[in-house]
Amino acid sequence: MAIFGGERDISLFYHLNKEMIQKIMDVQVLFYRLNLNATDTNFYGESAKKVYEAPILIHTVINLSPSETTSDDFGVDKVQTAEFGFLRDILIEQNFKPEIGDIIEYDSTMWEIDNVVEAQYYASKNPDSWFGGTNFGYSVSMVCNAHRTRQSQLQIVPVRTGTTTKKSSLPKNV
Figure (cartoon, rainbow, N blue to C red):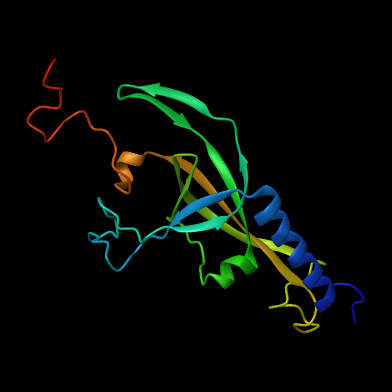
């Protein structure tokens, strides 16, 4: 029987983590879930236009990598990756589970999730698979590895395209 990692320890760490993330750090992101039922796919399971659900506001911890600029025949592009860490219990309270392909909006930038890792356990015990029962151990967080993606491809927010639908966008006196 383990001495540490019981329910009282887990409760302490949960409350400390929640206060740190929500009240001290207070970094929030918008989370867009991919709606697979409303997205039309071709024979290969690919889609040119993906449909996303309404965004959810969630507190997070972010680790951004340095951005790199690349240029090709189509112009300049920024390449960057990030890790978004979410407290697992907050996601459970909101009945939400991040998946590959979901979109995170942070600092007016869109990030597409490449991988979701749920392997941070208190006392190195996963309560769902530990042989000592579910009274010890704690799954602390879910970490989403993401890459920066173009807003124009997602069609979530309106992006300036260079064309106008109005007859004249200039003031009358010009």
